[in-house]
Length: 216
Image 1 (tube, rainbow, N blue to C red):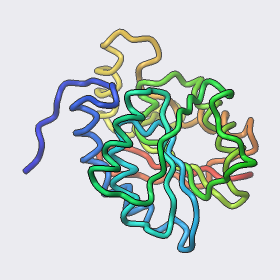
Image 2: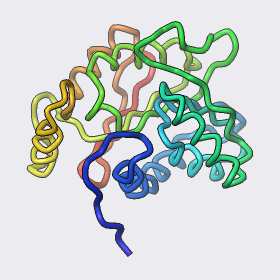
Image 3: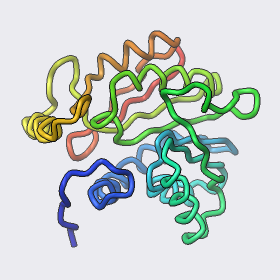
Image 4: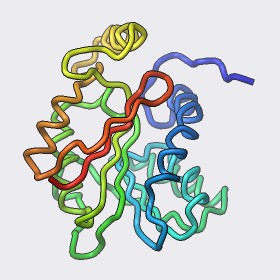
């Protein structure tokens, strides 16, 4: 049965975020099945929120270690609780990581990652976060690693569909500064500033993109 769509609410523990997460998790998993390392490795999620995605993906890749992170202390508690309840053994204790504050970033001398991913943050995050995301990813990725960014975006000023334009208008109608669809072109600019580049642009269900970034 299709779950009814709750009112828009970007809080990581909201019913809306849970609804969106259940809708997109399997298409994202299909991408990860094709591109994740086949041998032992490490995966970091930026902005893990409730932990629904990382705790869903991890059991499908028992050979990988998954590191959740978020800037919200309540979210960190929830992530750990979900891991415990679901008995997910390859998800590590969540860490505080704010992409806008370099002092919260983990040291690359301690651990590097084969994959970093982030899901559905930019419609409610300042585009300035993209610079921190790219810089942090450039520091923490192995030389052959990649960053995967999922969500709705404009593409060089154009909407993918009319429904994306309507969604953008709805998000902006909340009257919160920086809410609204961001442009792939701005993410590409941020990536270039940190020696990364867009290597693949995947069209995903529900009019979303999966953006793959690697070293240039």
